[in-house]
Length: 132
Image (cartoon, rainbow, N blue to C red; front, side):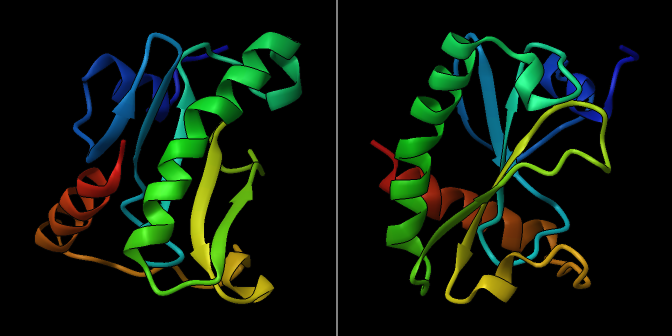
């Protein structure tokens, strides 16, 4: 698999607004979010489709994402944190965590928002302040 934009972010070649990191995963803000607080959770293992990862890796992925979703839920006016794994736009499996109040809030055909770098930094600080 060719190196994706996510692989470059994981390596530190491209900066990101990091939310959490482990040996296996990296979570960071989407810079073109559907909703304020949209986070991407990316495996460090380069797999194109999430189901190419083994069972243990998938379980760890959800376990890594859970505290992030719980923190996000405290930060934003939403009914829940929606999760989606689509994987069309980047050939590197990734999970979207998005604050939602309706199913349409997770509609990826909508035009993404365009927060400033300062707004992204403020969102990052807010989520980090609630992350345990």
